[in-house]
Length: 298
Ligand SMILES: Nc1nc2c(ncn2[C@@H]2O[C@H](COP(=O)(O)OP(=O)(O)OP(=O)(O)O)[C@@H](O)[C@H]2O)c(=O)[nH]1
Ligand SMILES: [Mg+2]
Image 1 (cartoon, rainbow, N blue to C red):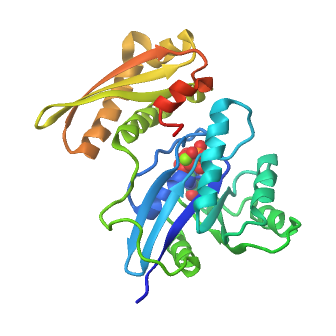
Image 2 (spheres, helix red, strand yellow):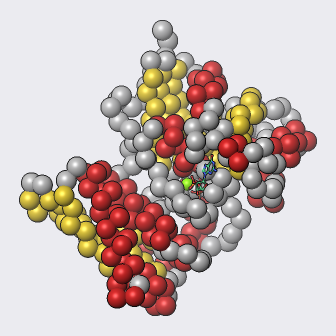
Image 3 (tube, rainbow, N blue to C red):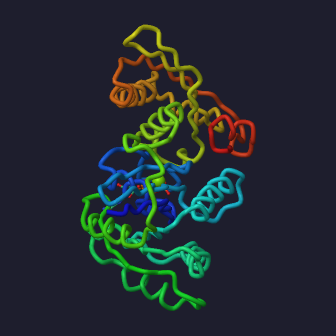
């Protein structure tokens, strides 16, 4: 049988469920998830191998309107993934009404050279604004229509994910796999560890803080055969945020550290000694040097 293979970009507004879909497709956690928008900050590739071929899914930062440097990098990472893909999954959240950002997105996608599947997510919560989203696409003026399917799914519950995979393979070109079959993701481990810590912070913190936070792993040393020492620095923008992250008597930081350590130990299959530091770095979001160190800039 001829194999089909290719890159599939998952695009959409923040918080629609792109990373949840990636993890569900791969049945493994590859990308971090949270209830706050703008969680994903990287292009994260996750690889699905089947008899019929290989799909390289590319999770992307949610596309949004904002002028900050960080936002520019996030949006450009998402748009680059779109350029490199054989097929685009355009994901929307059925529980949220069509917004300005959605209209901008549709105008960017409607004349795409690549085929598109519109993935209508969170169907477990009902049809919501399904008709509005279908209408939004159908009524957009376009030369030719790259949209092949509307597919409602629940990324969280797994509903209709096999239907989605079926549709994806039907649209991929005949090609040999790009990656060896034992690789699940090519995301660097150092960044993955920083992401796990950031996810635990997002889970624990409320308010507007999430967007002010970044995590970098500073050192990773295998002290003994079975123990890895990891030092990570949590960046915040203001001293007041630093005290929130540390918490009363250091409780918050301790809890985040414990949750992250457990998950990192599972990932590395080793004991981990995790040390967390919090540092105030004013305007890190505008600082190219820091953005590069965080891996947000190539
Ligand atoms: N009920 C329901 N919730 C979902 C579904 N998919 C995702 N969610 C929730 O939606 C929230 C956002 O999910 P993410 O996967 O982080 O969304 P994202 O599109 O990757 O967000 P960004 O990385 O910020 O662009 C989380 O709280 C998820 O649990 C779904 O199918 N049904
Ligand atoms: Mg995400």
